[in-house]
Image (tube, rainbow, N blue to C red):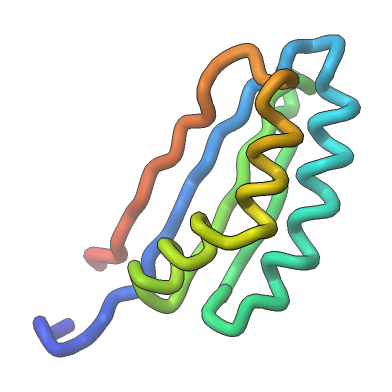
Length: 102
């Protein structure tokens, strides 16, 4: 990959709702996924539930560019979901970005 090439941006976002709010948080997240997948530069957007902790969710994402990811994060879909999840989460969402190196 050269400096000219824009690498795909991979994202892992972990969310921890309060156990009693997990069902409500899951509903919000499930609704986000198909809408996010419609975004032109979205390459992957999956919602996963932890086998051992049903109140922990992970979003696995891939975006064509860093700019595409930033636009997604600033878009109405995520702003609304973030607001709806605000009182349901036991701790802040952890978002990690990755690039492919091999």
